[in-house]
Image (cartoon, rainbow, N blue to C red):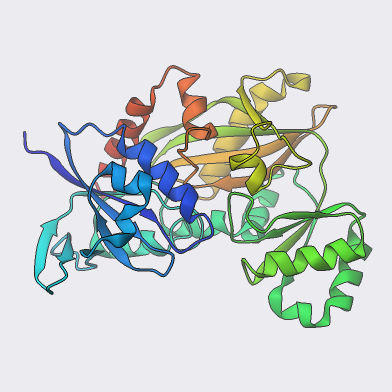
Length: 355
């Protein structure tokens, strides 16, 4: 049987560029090369699309020196990418399937999903609507509110409003007690997130978040267990959820440094949680995934308070696949290896445009 041409896209213009590259290495190493002929497309922080020559080039970052451009053509009749070398010579390469291992803006927010929908090339992960909704924390909250699932109280702010920061501060302080969390509405890996205990820290945190996104979320601080649940399925495939994993942050909260640079941070699967919360969370995760019209995969994050109250935090439609990422770890705890998981995601993607 002929191998399928699989394009793995990684990197991207978002603040999660490095995380995407780490995730891509782990995904690439689990792909069955007897079944797939793999092509690697790296997107630089400046937005250039380049062909990468092998997983080591991704691991070392040398792919950024590539002299061959590789772009997906949106023409649905051709289903291909164009490879252009340094001499300007163009080669057409058919593409059967895409795994967009991209986190954050311009990758996890419906943009590249829209390109692939136009090209009618099957791809791993959620579609345009689910990706865009789940990327924007404000709109996700509005969806989840309709489900009656508890979530943190919040105040939405826009970058434009910060020119009158005194009024913004007054609005936040009237609605929420300190401490509060400040988050970019469209960012992941806790980029641009901070915790404010007073007015000065609030203003500083708003400025930090505004550097990541024009929409900002100020939330009440929730005390409790920080937990995550993996979801798979959608379309013809039944939606299933893993068990629960807990994050033990090595800092005051699980920010970017705590996730990727603090050796004190830990993740554990199947933690003991109060009042049977661990049994309830997978059902809530599936309900949220279905509500946003999820497809393929997502990781849904919650807080669990000591009295057993479950509070929705956020949903990630292209969760990390790094060595410390919870999504593959949770499925491994259920007997699904990384290689099996990647194959399930690829097979499910191939069903995307089936009637």
